[in-house]
Structures are given as C-alpha cells and as structure tokens.
Length: 288
Image (cartoon, rainbow, N blue to C red; front, side):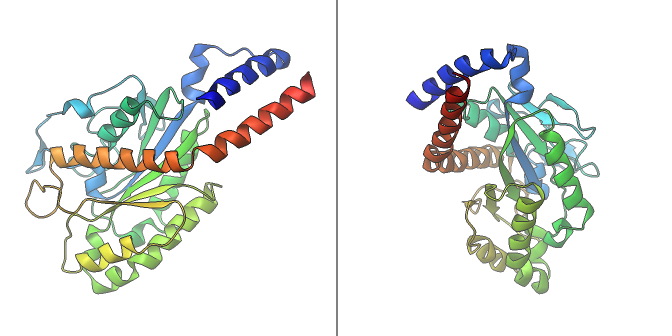
C-alpha cells in the first residue's frame, strides 16, 4: 500500500510537468486489466444448456457489472453478460461459463491491481482439438488478433485462461501429443504477443469425449513452464453426466481461477511495483 501511495504522489509531480490532462473518463479504456478466455466448450460455457436450449438462469456471481467489459465479435468493447461467448462460439448454444464468475470474484477481492475495469476477451470454440489452436491455424490467428485489439486502447493482459482437451481424449495420438502441443502454444503466444512472462492458467479436465482422458490430464499437470498454473476441475458436477460442467460448477470454477490468479499476483507483487517506482523516481529527478 505504501508503494501505491508513493506512486500516486510521483504521478502527481510528473504529469503536470508533462502537461498531460488526465480525466476520469480516460481511465477505463487505458487502465483495464485484460483476460483472454480460450479453449473449447467448457470455457465457452454450457451451464444451463439442455437439448440446445439455454435456461437463461444467471447466478448472482455471474451478474453484469459496469466494471466488466467483453470484446465483442465485432471487436468493440461492451458491457459483459452471460452468455459471455455468444457470437464467438457461434455454431453452438452457449450458456454460463467461468468468465463472469471469475471477473466478479476478482473485483470483490479488491486486488485487481488497481484496474478500474476488467476486459474479458472470449475466444473459446466448442469441439476443438489442441491441433486446431496451434500457430498457423485460424483459431490461433483469431486469438492473437483479438488479444492485440484488446490492448489498442491501453491496459495490460493479466492472464490467458485456458480450458481445453476433451476432444483430445478420443484419439491416442492426440492424447500423446497434448503436452508437446501445449508447450508450443504457450511459447508461441508469448512470442507473438511480445509477453515472455505471460501467465497462463490452465484447467485440468473434469471429463472427456474418449478413453484417454487421464493421459491428457497427466500432460496438463506435467507441463513444466514458468508462469503456468494448474486449476483442477476434476470432481466438479457435470450437468449432462459426462461432459459439460453445470452452472454451479462453472461458478465454482470461476472462483478457483480467480484465486489462482490472486495467488500468483501475491507471489509476484513486489518486483513489478518496485521497478515502476524506480522508473518514476528517475523521471522526477529528470524534470525537477
């Protein structure tokens, strides 16, 4: 808290010297914290969907909030609401996913890094394999494009939230390749977004379409990369008995993802702030 107070004081000294006019209206687009949501159907959200029909029930944890935006299919910021992936996972019926519960939990924590607005960038598409997300594919290109557009008005990416792999449990070859392909995806995203330390929080499978679910799960748990965190969905209730998380399970998963992000931020909170303070102090010395 002392560092944040000092940072405000330093900004107050430097901005007048630069003749920069900062108003409250400028803050939301330029100081937002962005999260990329990618993967397949359980990230897109099937909570409350039965026989291709969504029941329309939105839990309080998933309620709209003026401080939570989503990047629309038309690449415009708008207030986020369920179904968050409507128009993104366009060939399927979307329901409740983990995104809104995640964002609301993050805001309630009061530890969103000082960002006044959270920007959610839905990218998940149901029925996709890991091979469909590798560099060179349409899904990969679309994810990178949407992530870049999300930052055009300022802000920073907090994390990629990744829940995928059910389709890779059908064929043994896909299951055996999952770990290598996931490694490639993370490294390519970090390179193409110019974020070598990009945080990725991946969700361990709660279910699968085939008989090789445990092979994929072991690959997920065994991924050894810095700034990759694992949240396990195994044991969360499935609404159809075998594949998709129920609405309440999605809410619980959203809370788990938020806690994983907050735990990561707490462990890494000192270094970034200290570096920025050093930069601001240097600016003060130059101008004063």
